Amino acid sequence: MPIPIAASNPHADEPAKALEYFKTLEASTDFVLASQGNTTTIWTKPPPADMEGNMPITKGQALLTKEGITLDQILDSLRNSQQRFKWDPRFEGLQIVEAYDQAKDHILLVSLQKGQWPIISGRDFVVSMKKFVESETKGYVIQSSVVDSRHGEQKGRVRGHIYVAGWIVEKSGEGFQVTYISHVNPLNLPATLLNLIATETPACCGSFVRHVEKNGPSPADE
Image (cartoon, rainbow, N blue to C red; front, side, top):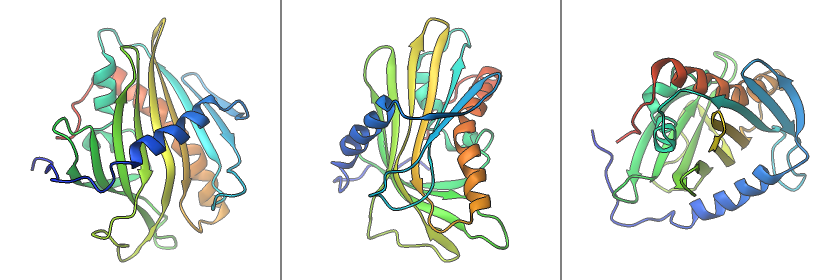
């Protein structure tokens, strides 16, 4: 079913605010190297003391070198929910509620994240997501939590909060540098699962790159 286009946008101000905070994280110099593999580098930093949650802010980075791929194709691939099952191990699904422009660059969605059955409930997030193309060589996909009266907490799940989570795709000499930065409060998770998520979340940057290298780009959800 096509994504419906809303007559009005109750979350019109959210993307610009989220992008502003995201760019402060992008420019941050106090991330600490956590691991460096063949394809993916991961950094972390503590969350600010004045913001709720003890989940580290994480950053993952990988280089996509597939020939012939474009910036828009990569940004669209990041917004394909069916393909995301193949590269994000914590992803459990999403419902796209509505779009706020004809290009469907700004959408409202409800995203589901796995818990640890049967002990820990899964999380859900009501999210504003928008694609920004900053130049011919750089773009963003930015997500942040919003309050929407039509979407209360789901039975059996805990409502988490995304301060900001997003992707930077930027042309480099050898291809495109793909970076994922996430500041999320999943609420009341035990340390063991918190540590697992802090590792898996930025690592999906490398998983995404390997998926596109192998299978090619995908269109955005429509």
